[in-house]
Length: 152
Image 1 (cartoon, rainbow, N blue to C red):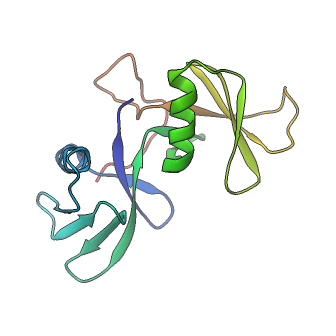
Image 2 (cartoon, rainbow, N blue to C red):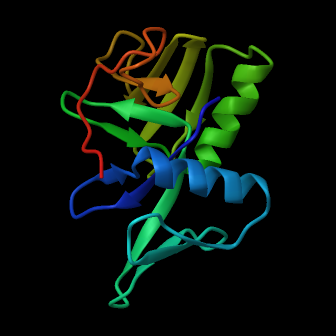
């Protein structure tokens, strides 16, 4: 799976630019802890998943693998849930329901390209939100962007 890094915004998660994303992922893979972002007066504490600005403002950071798509944007699922989804994906374990921590929703992996988020007690034919593995990339036609998300 491909990974994208995000910081908490006022109303939604905002993706880091390509340079910062690459820097964060490289440091994460190499066991790095604190990363100074390119062109920003901010650092990210990778283990704590916190961005700290030069003014002392803290924002949550998340490493995204799976994304819930509503009509207007993509939102990363928690890293813990993404890990469970990825484990099921790798062993091709389909039609598995993964209950979300909010106790109001669950994700059903119908197949590799059919992952859905439902309300907890929804019927099989109930409306759902699509979940995508990997962040959509406008440059990669095999992973199209179907929702809009702000890029930093």
